[in-house]
Image (cartoon, rainbow, N blue to C red):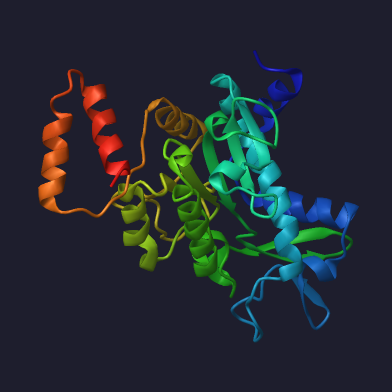
Length: 299
């Protein structure tokens, strides 16, 4: 049963687009910050990013990072909340769980949980989202708060979202930290959310991380980041662009219903064969899997 607020959210949610970014800038300017905190000032003009046609630095504004971070985490919660409720779960921002190395200083951006609380136990967390979103396209501030769309991410000097190597490395590092925190983390899927494609250099990496079970996917929540060619999906499915909300819900359903278990080890073929032989003596497939995982974890 959804609440009135959840029904309202369901009627207006959409995937990331230029309207989302314009809404961010408009609300930020109207409520709590100045143009200098959000835009590059080049001569007397304000730009979201430095256009490729203009000389100047292309780094991301540090003052904007925290603002877009808070905005995108709240935006993601609104998108995923109706999906979570269909599985009798809650979408919760800033989740802390010391048992899997999620501290107040390094919490989970968004989780699906069995209780609506920021303080969680490992067994109550069913899905973790690490959010790496940013402003993707370029805009120019004109007049008193009006924004002019200038072009997609290929027209400016910035590297937004999953196109940034440091964003990818931070997401990977945090996910590995969760995975090696102990047995409590082995049944919790991890998804990295972005709103851009990835670079060619990360195609093999994201597929390997998915195959290894460290991260269950890197997803871009922006279906149309450019009208030109871009990487929509990696061959192994480690990265994919979410095309619509129905696809998103089906992916979440598959992840939540699969009884996945992360395991990682480096042992000899002889010992591995021994484990398989012992596990095969169990009666059911589930018992065989449980026995095999138990032996792997005791190595």
